[in-house]
Image (cartoon, rainbow, N blue to C red; front, side, top):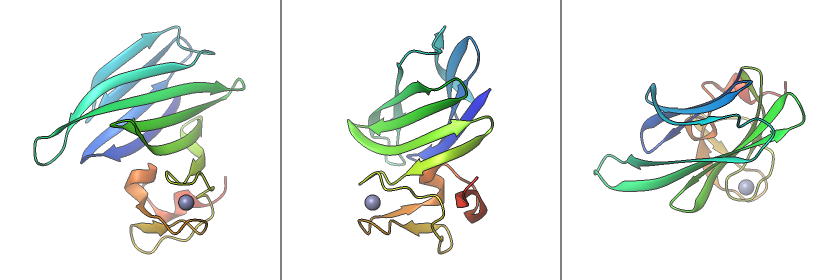
Length: 138
Ligand SMILES: [Zn+2]
């Protein structure tokens, strides 16, 4: 089971890629499930409300990357907000949402991380990791 997490509009979003099916959970509640999703590109669509009650159209695109890894792209209102690669229970590749530069190995200031390539500021939560330690290369 490959698992990736991120926070989106104040919600915890989790992607679970199993052998036979793929599932997206929001705050622990399943919102999308696709059977036999392995080895194909699969999109999961759902709406998320932000703190103001505005709904955002979200998409999570999962693509197999070899036998053991999955590339996960998270989009909100058509804009790419996160790209990561998951293997087993951990994230093995994390990319800047703005320019795709690798964010692994970057140093966080508190909860915030600056992309060394384009200067875009993001948070550990938005990158789907809990602590600065998770940014270290696997
Ligand atoms: Zn960047």
